[in-house]
Length: 187
Image 1 (cartoon, one colour):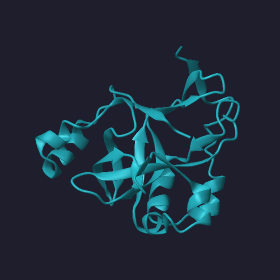
Image 2: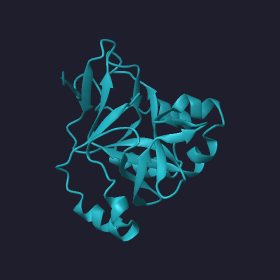
Image 3: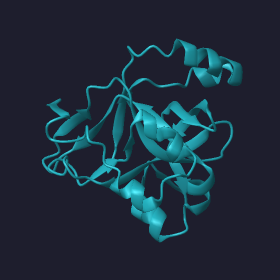
């Protein structure tokens, strides 16, 4: 599960902002969140071969779903249309998980940017997205779910539907392992 994630404010997104300024009015641009991202925040997402601003939280049956289990996508048809036609990639620096003792951990790699697989739904004026999660492996001692993390070379294949659901379930990046991720207790 991913209850919050982080987008490092020191990452230079000035070129991306120039693109966004052509698409959104200033009041919408002012909604863009960086730093710690909470559900319902508007954040930077890549979809339809372009950068977008989207709100974190997929609306389903009057509920705001921030995460979608890949197994639910596989086993039901609830998300079928959006998984086929509305894939997105959520841009982040790392994510937070809470262990069974309610201790918060920040999980990241040595890369400045990581990419979460997501789906979105069309809404006005800003689309809504949900982060796709899978069972954790190396971070299981913290939490049993993690976002599906794509490396830069996997983004196009994901967005263009070249991965089966089973391949996505198995897609656990090498850099999310005991040796490669850093866990920092924030409290």
